[in-house]
Length: 454
Image (cartoon, one colour):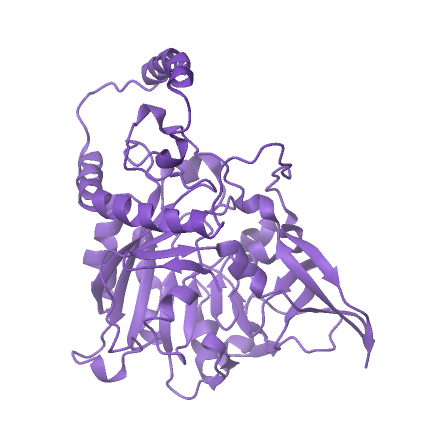
C-alpha cells in the first residue's frame, strides 16, 4: 500500500513501494513449457531527491517542513555562508532582472491562489512530514551513502513517434469490433497490434513481455491502449468486452457500462516543455475532444491534474468540466518533498511552487446522480486535502491515487487513467506513451525463483 500515514489533513505516500508491490511475482516465459517467477523493483535512484532543486535559504520560512530538522546547524556556520549566499542571490537576481517590475496578470492570479492555500500546505505538510520521520520513511542526509548515477535516457522514447506513424495507417476492423488481445500465460513473444486493440494481462501476477522488440513489465489485471487523441474509439468499444479486476474485485463490464473513476494527467502547454521537447503538449481546447460522456458512468468521479498556471485551473473548472457535464467537487494539492522532508522548491518561490493541483468533479448526465454515484455516501469528498510524497525524477510521473481513493470510492469501481505513462493493476490506461515507464530498463531484478516446467 502506498499510504505511509494519513490524518485529517491528507496522506503521506510512498510511490515506489506502491509500484514495487505489483511486481513481487512476475512470470517470465523463456520457452514453451519453461516458466520462471522473479521479483522486480523500480530503481531507487528515481526517488532519490536528497536536496531541494532550489535552496530555500533565500526564502526563509520557519514554518516550512525540514527547517526544524536543520536547527542543529551552528550559528557560526550560518554566518560564514550568509555573505556568500547574499552575493549569489544578487548575481542571480541581476541575471533574472525583469524589464518591467509590474507583475503580469498570470503572476498576480498565481500569487493570489498561493495565499489561499499556503496555510493549508504548511500545516498539513508539517504534521505528515513529522510522521514520516517517526516511521523512518523520511531521513536526513546519509553520510557516505552511494547512489546510482541518474540516466533517464531509454530506448522507449519512440512510443509517441510510433503512435504518430500509426495514424497514417488505415483503420482496421479491430476498431469497429472493439477487439481485445490478451497476453496468454504461455506466450514467449508478443506480436500484437498495440494501436488498434486493447491489450490486457488478465493473470494474477505481473508479466515480462516483448512488445515491438523491447521488454516491458505489465502489472496484474491491467489493460491499455497505445494511441493518441485521434484514435480513442477502441477504448470506447472496450467497455463491452473486458473483464478487469479493479480494487481487487473481479467485474465484467456489460452493455452500456462505463468507468466509475477517470483520472486525467493532460500534457499542458508551458514554456519549459517547449524548450526541453520532452513530450508533445496539447492545447487546452483539444481536451474537449476526449469522449468523457461515452466513457463515464453516471456519477463518475473525475480527477484532473493541473499545473500551477491559473489559466489552466480556470479552464478545467469553467470550461472543460461544464463541457463534459461535470460538477466541481473539490480541489486537492500534491505537495512534493525531498527524502529529508523539505519542499523541492521553496514554498514562496516566485518561479516554481512545490505543489500541483488536483481538481475533483462528478459526471452528472442527469441532475440526480446520487443513486448511481461510485462515491461512498458515508465519506463525501472533502475539499483542500493534501497528498505529500517524494516525487519521481521521471518527468511528469504522478503518484498513484488508487489507495487514496479507496476511502471514498466503492470497492467495485471501474477505473481509467487518461494520458497515462505507466500502468496500474486493475486499471485501464490510455496514452501515446502509456507503457513508457514499464520499460525493463527502469527496474532491477531483486530475486529469482526456481524454474518450473509445465
